[in-house]
Length: 110
Image (tube, one colour):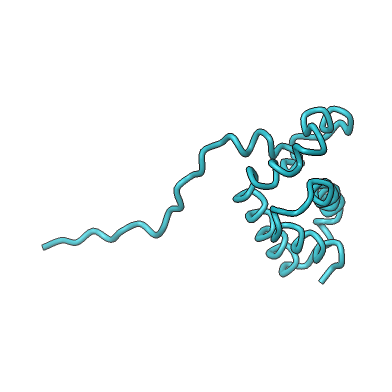
């Protein structure tokens, strides 16, 4: 696996570590965004899983990040595009969790 991707995957598994490490995680994700077109199908799957984990735990990551950085100010400083959604954890953490949808139930006829 791509070393950068491997580091990001591991980063997303630990929302309770230092916000400084989370800041590095966000930078890694931005680097990965530039390389996404070069990733294999399996690597893209792993990236999607790590992204889902980051999004699911956005509030936890944000709690630690906020101790070290103001994400809104950092986005302005870096001129971060909206497509780099991982830099918007402060916004995403405020969105209520969507219910997980399973398969549609089958209609039973008598």
